[in-house]
Length: 95
Figure (cartoon, rainbow, N blue to C red):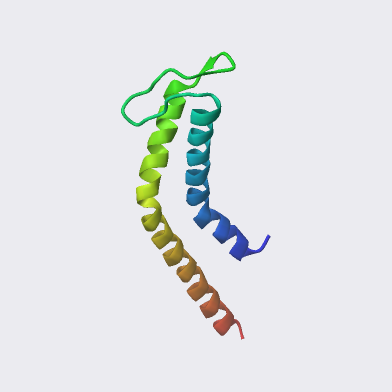
């Protein structure tokens, strides 16, 4: 795997985890008919197991992750630019 793909994966993984959290909370709310909201944990039984606290924590991450997406994209752009500058300098002095 190339360095660029590794960096792209590392810088985009927070966004991927946020989308995963949103999808899990939405699917649990719809398929298991659980009431998921940010105020407090509510009981949610799926296949006999209690997932209320976990879904509450995941919904808090999904809520605040949405507000942090512009900051994460800013970090991704700065990191990507730093990598490109370092790669350019390396290629320039390698000759």
